[in-house]
Image 1: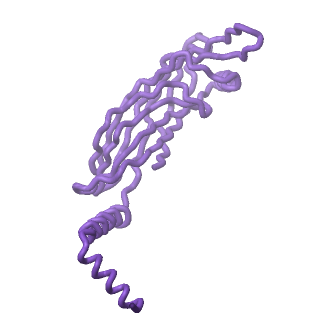
Image 2 (image 1 turned 30 degrees about the vertical axis):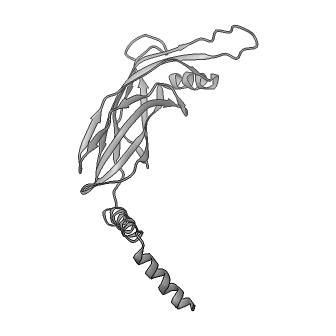
Image 3 (image 1 turned 90 degrees about the horizontal axis):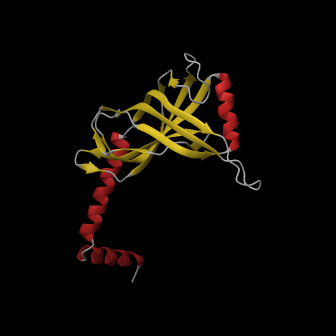
Length: 216
């Protein structure tokens, strides 16, 4: 049998088999995906940090039980934040399948995660949240204590508000698979000098709104 006859025979067998509808279905799905990402081309959601107020900030001294143990500092930290998200797409909706919000200082998580319930964000819609972030007796490294002390002396405190979760795109009746979303919001806070209390119990407030970076 020549190569040409072999190819014709293979096509005939494929047409007679029950796999042909499955192949057509897979091709149709690929065409839809190509339409969404090439023609519609969804843009990433935009996140903003509008407000952050530290409500509790207390750093405990180390308690050495033995000379062989390293000094461990415990941080009690809580604050409220106001965040918003905007869907910039005119044709694509966004499903957020739950978002976790937490505070970070010098790449160390200093609060427990607050969970934002799943929601759907329509075309060009804006949603806002005000989660309460709290960490009780969070162990931190000694070098972070030095950084906190220096920040207090400078009168400024740099914090990250981070958001992690999963989202799906929606075009018409079609929904994409889940994608991991990671949001980083910088917060420049200043110490409140209106009272005579000493660090670290004085209030710290966020002074300027910021735009967050979004990775998907």
